[in-house]
Image (cartoon, rainbow, N blue to C red):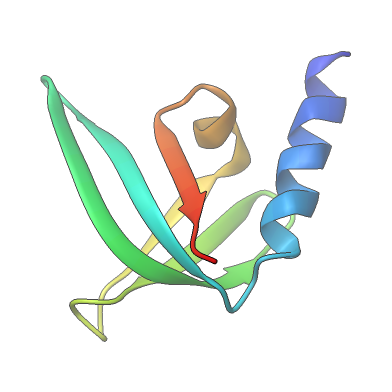
Amino acid sequence: MDGSNVLASIRENIENHVGDKVTLKANGGRRKVFINKGIIEKAYPSIFVIRLENDTQRKVTYSYSDVLTKTVQLVFSV
């Protein structure tokens, strides 16, 4: 499977979870890992937006390649 197919399936998976709660594990560099809970707010062609649960005003955006390279890991809540 080539890279574009993998990115397309990651995007499709995230698009299917818009509005759902998610646990976000993000690599902050220098061995820092940030873990937050939030809701996937929007999915655009190249990025997606997560509104953090603990701070209603704060939103973070990541690209689908961040998920592919495991810079960001998402765990969907059931």
